Amino acid sequence: MTNLHSWNKYCEGMKCEWAFSFSDKEMLIFARLSGDYNPIHTDLDFAKSKGFNSTITYGLLLSTQMSRLIGEELPDKNAVLTSIQIDFMKPSYPQDKLIFEANLVNKSESTKALEFKCNILRNQRILCRGIVNAIWIP
Amino acid sequence: MLNVTEVFNNLIPIFKSVFDDIDLVIDETTKAEDIDEWDSLTHIRLVVSIEKKFDLRFTSAEISNLSNVGDMAMLIMKKQTSD
View 1 (tube, each protein chain N blue to C red):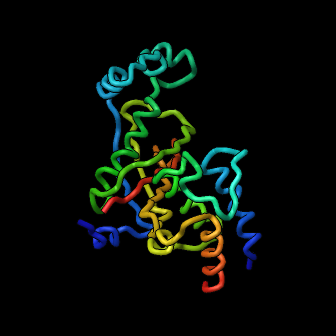
View 2: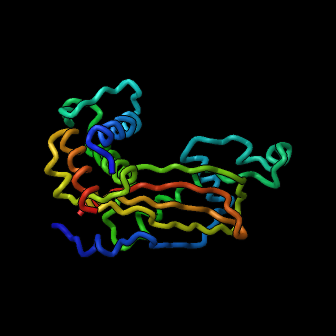
């Protein structure tokens, strides 16, 4: 059944934002899920030897917030992720208090495509930026 | 305002980019069945890229009535005139 009323809740310029962080336990879970045990993410001394303050958070763990955007933070449950682009500009560390912000920059009426520009920030400084594309399925 | 030849010439690099094929050859009669990679998601990327390039918005009906690239070029021409 089509539900264009729900589609009309999307508008260009729509913004959403939330706070999040990842714990050491969640880092370990991601290591198990991904199979990536690189010591830059798991060994404090190794990470420090490379010039970081701590082990660094997996980039793709940060990108999970893009999944949350499409799956949980939109006006309905009808959007499906089709692509992501993400630039990791500065390292993030476990326990960092982070903000994810997204802005709907393009809503295509003809194709029901949605494009969001996203940032992940710590203390108002951008650590990651990216683009999320989704399609809306009636 | 671009003429139809100029519109078509602007479509070529969009197609090459969306299909990630610098050797892709298209003409006015090219249709989805002629390009293996032209599936539903690629179609969406193509339409959105064209909307951005020409700074216009199509309706679902306009898109569903197209049968080939020439139709698309003509539609762009028409919308440039009407906007």
